[in-house]
Structure formats: structure tokens, C-alpha cells
Picture 1 (cartoon, protein in one colour):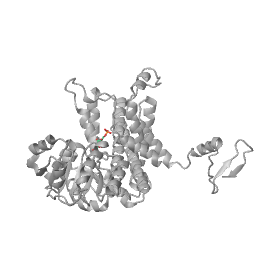
Picture 2: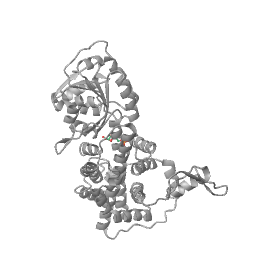
Picture 3: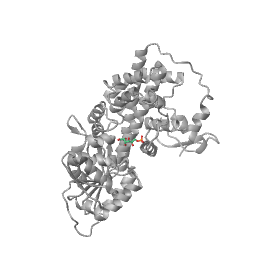
Picture 4: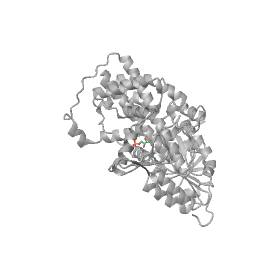
Length: 484
Ligand code: 6PG
């Protein structure tokens, strides 16, 4: 940190890292009336922001990190918008020597939350605040109003909150930004947001495939079905863009655009992190996991090549007779599977909150996801209401609203999953969500047999339904039961 009080400027917020996201965030701050200090490793990007958008507000451009820091009012609030990982550490290391006690560094990239916990601890030891903040909404959201999920100290939010809330998306006048919780909480919630995004996208893709295979419908026709769905309970950004994408025609070939895109889904890693953490916490986030593995399967080229035309299908063509009824079945199955994915994601947030002592308000998370972010959707209001009814709700599906909304669709859900299995249409997310629904509502699970097997081969012990204690049966001896 600066040995003595370094120069103090007037900028209310600073942004370093002016690639598309950083540039748009800086513009968003400026358009909302804040004086914005801007900096980038290469000055050309800083200059081009001033040249192209200098008239949108007040920017203070600096070439050196020292001047950038000096142009900010105290406590300094600096948003770092660079690639997650080593680049973030490098920028922080460069900034820190110039900062003074109480200054706030915000990492607005998609950092992995353990890194955020580590960085927060290191900066706290130097008397600085480190805020790991999820920012969702892509380029357009950054410019026009993202959903913002800041972690860090509650004190840092006193300073940052008003600024971030002002630039965030608003739904019914309510900002899509709130304090999430200490250290890694903000980036954790953003990670789960992305995991849910993966599940949502996979479910939509499966619905599209079901309609394509079941109805033999064209991309444009299916796009129209999604457009219709977007006027009801499923209304959401992802359904809306799906309708748009499916109706888009490739200029070069004249084909439906979706038909010329290579069918290998990629990822930058947030979905994988979500699944890894679900395993660590022991939370069954099966919808997110299936979605992540479905992307992996799509990219498993040698395996797909070996299987194509080789593995027998034993199916017949799917000829749906009542088209309207089938479309409605798929809609209901999509809705139900989607609720399962969200229910699981919120369970994961609750488990991590307990594990790390974050005290995350799940209803507030659903509220700030209503606008700005990729998973923004009409039904998030219902999730907020559910957690307002019961802040400790153990299972979103068990909330009275969702029990009804999903329950009504169960017969359709079963028909769709059974139909897909019979006709060889892969629906990992639809199917696993239904399996989760049946598993979580089961009075008795075959887990009892697994415990018995574990005790048989490894003396791993078991508990009984009829009395307390832990037991082992002497399987290789006289099969008497012992207290373990
Ligand atoms: C957002 C998005 C954003 C991005 C992800 C997708 O909330 O604005 O989630 O973070 O689109 O990086 O990542 P994949 O490349 O992993 O699909």
C-alpha cells in the first residue's frame, strides 16, 4: 500500500480492463452520472473508449496504474474486469501498492469462488476490501443493466451498493443487485447462476429436439412454438432468444441457422465448477450435472464416431397424432424439469451458505435474477415468494405453489420421458429431473440395499429403521448382528 496518503481525485468509481465487458460497465457507470476513472493495460483501448463514447458522461482516462488510482475519490472503488485466473491476480498485485486503507477492489469477472476467498483474505490483511462480484447479462447487460451479485464485507457494500444498484437492471423499480454475503459468496452465487443457465439451456435444447423428432417440425415452426411459450409461465430471456435463433436463416446456405451449426457445445468452466462443488457438498444437482455432461458428450467425437451406425436403436419412427397435446406435454415437462433444476441450485446455495457461514438469503437471490441476467424469467418471482413464505424451505418443490405447478404436469412429464426413451431421443436433463422428483418424494429408497452391500463387503456398518445405533452383521461368520 502507499506509504503515505497518495493523491486523491474525484472519480467515484474506476474500471480497469476495458475489453467489451469492462468497457460497457464503464459506459454504464458514466451514463448513470458517475465520474468514471478508466484504465487498461494498453492505453489504446482507454483512448478508444474516450473517443467513441466520451460524450456519454465523465471519464477520467489514465495511462499508468498510479495515475488511475490517484484519479479516484476515497475510499477508492475499483472494478477489475479482466480474464479470471492469473490475469486477475496480476492486476490486483499491480493495484495494491498504490491503495490506501479502506479502499475497495471489486473483481467483476467470473472468478472461481475459492480464489475469491483467498484474495479477500489477502487484501483484508492489508486493510483493503475485496469484493468478488458476479455480474450477469453479457455485453448488453453490462451496458444497459446487469444483474449484480457482490460479496465481500457488509461495510464495502455501504459504499458500493448505491452505485451498483443504480447501474443494475430494475424489475418493477427494484434493483437486480443486493449484498450476497462475505468473501466468496457473490462469486459462488454467480457460479450457481451459470450452472442453472446450463441446465436451462440443455432443457430447452431437449424440448427442441423432442418437438423436432416427435412432430417432424422445422426449426422455424419450433421457433414459433417457443415464441408462444414465451407468453406464459415459461416466459424468460432464454426462451425468447431460442425462438429468435430457431427462426433465423443462414444467409450463406439458406438453411435454418441451427441446422448449419456444429453440434458440439463448449464451455468456459463455470458449469463444471458448479458440478464439482455439488459433489463436494453432496448436493444432488442432477439437472446441472446432466447438462454439463451433455455438453461433454456432444464433444466426445471419437466415441460418437464409433457409436454412429453401430449401436442398435430398436426404435420406430415417432409419429405423434395429437400434435397440440404433444406440444403441451413438452411444455409441461420443460416447466417441471426447470423447477427441479432451480430447486437443486437453491439447495446448493443453502448448503454452501451453511458450510461457509455466508447467511445467503435465497429469496433475495431469486429477486436479483429477475432482470438483467441470462436466466431472468417470470417465474423467479414465485421463487422469491416461496422463500418469503418460509425462509428455511428445505425443498423448493415442496412449496405450495410449486407443488401445484409441477404436480399438474407430472402425467405429461412421464409421457414425454417415456416417449423419448421408447423412440431413442436423448433427454438426459428431462429424464434425470423426473428421476430426482420420484427419488426425493419416495417413501423408501433402494439406498437400504446399498448400505447392506457396503456392510457385506467392507464392514462399513448400517443403521436400522427400528432402533438407534450403528450395526454390523458378521457376513462371513455366523451372521449375527453386532453393535458397531
Ligand atoms: C452471464 C453468463 C456469462 C457467460 C458464461 C457462459 O451470466 O452473463 O453466464 O457468464 O455467458 O460465461 O459460459 P460458457 O462458455 O461456460 O457457456
